[in-house]
Length: 193
Image 1: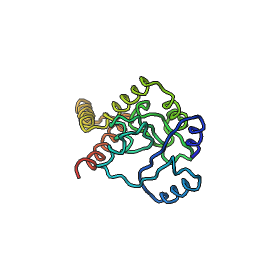
Image 2: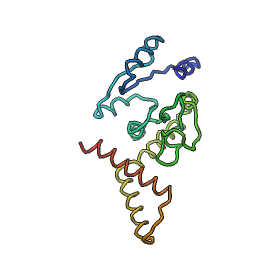
Image 3: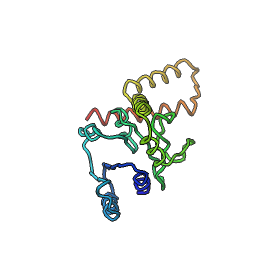
Image 4: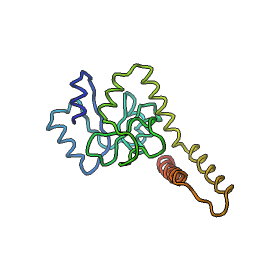
């Protein structure tokens, strides 16, 4: 937990509330206990989707990935990415700082930050800057809404119709289309159970 130790040593009183489970959940809880961090790092386990917004009520920041990252941003919480499979506490930044739909995949051609650096910048930010990050993260999250996904599909279909039979689809168009499809599947799972 080097980020926690460094942030606390700089005078910031922070708590981490960790949700989820997995093969290493018990190991994680034990590491927290071994380092005497139970007063700052809380491993809550699974959180029902119906309780997600309530879990964010007093959150200053969300650090994570996947659908929860987008949902937290949509709830108005500044949302900082993690990079999948990273051995270090690295990030591509707040979701509003990242172009495109790929927010967490390793090896992207994007600037990499230390989580600690981005967290400390947010902790030291003025109210106006914090509010701007909140608003911009929520705007980025809106790109994953059903309305936005449908618009992307219609645009892609119209582009294909208006081109010749042997339309060449660019990598960017293909990536956007694939991302849109994935977004649709995620939202269907979340909202149509």
